Length: 398
Ligand SMILES: Cc1cc2nc3c(=O)[nH]c(=O)nc-3n(C[C@H](O)[C@H](O)[C@H](O)COP(=O)(O)OP(=O)(O)OC[C@H]3O[C@@H](n4cnc5c(N)ncnc54)[C@H](O)[C@@H]3O)c2cc1C
Image (cartoon, rainbow, N blue to C red; front, side, top):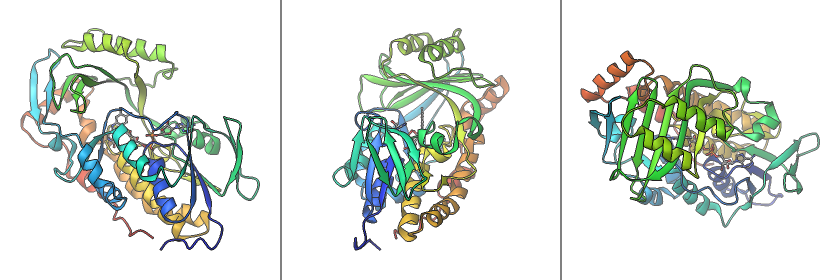
């Protein structure tokens, strides 16, 4: 059912224009809401590491009409080669076996391509405010009074935080992140570097206990590799958001590593797109408060160990918009969104103990066991993965 527009359109401000934000904007616009998206970057963020769209999320992008474009943009990796601490080959496997994806249906695309495709689907229909962000939120009146960092002030019926794992909207609503973050024992760095290895549409991953260094040639640009460094730290590091601390910690963690890792560390020092973070999940007691709700990583980041953050963001956006369309009472709609989506989020967060997570063993024994599984070509993902990816039967659009 679409709105007849006979009553004033309800206004929604979405913070964040990556994946959850534009997907939510698309569906809310389709249901007749007047949507504004504020993004702190100056444009939709391009580039970025490869991400997966799987299971229920495929149905979301199909219903948005963007599936053909995503299929055109998909990365078709040929193989994943695992290397041991000395750089010797351990096993070569098919990417789909590793991730539990269904070949021919699930997709791997560059994060920037997905953002661009979602943005293009709404850019003409929705107001975008780039280079700005929410400074304060005040819910004491009949709506949400928003003060923007850029100096503007506006009132919206509803505000949704789609501003990622370290969401500012969540901080304004619920306070600092600490109590809501579950640290998973790793830190990582991603950046791009020159493809001096002649890799082509393939991933190479070097492992030692508690450390992984991967190079990914995605095929979008033969001259460039996506580098990924992941290392185990039992306790979260202090001040890991400070760039100098990040480079120092990563370099220390890989100081005596073999294979091509010294060159990768050198490339990290010179990278202009280095992104480092701790590996963690967001677990909230409630996904909304008053007229403000959260979606995607801001509400239930599952960590890249599950490979499901993007799919959760897409499905969550669909479910939230549908709930708001179905019930004019925002409190009831937010409750319906959460009750319809929470089990799906929880099932996918629980995958940290399976599948892709098993690629980063922290002990020599666990690494040997993983290598044995890879050599035997026993597909890494247990049936639990495939079940979780599709654990939500998507209701029809409202
Ligand atoms: C290295 C790495 C590998 C990953 N691999 C995978 C994978 O294989 N598969 C997978 O599904 N997922 C993967 N993910 C996770 C995936 O990227 C996220 O789960 C997904 O991007 C979540 O989308 P989102 O829209 O909720 O948040 P984000 O993509 O984090 O977007 C948040 C947006 O909000 C903006 N923003 C932030 N703060 C503000 C503010 N104060 N005001 C305005 N705007 C703001 C940001 O600029 C950004 O555009 C990976 C993540 C990382 C870091």
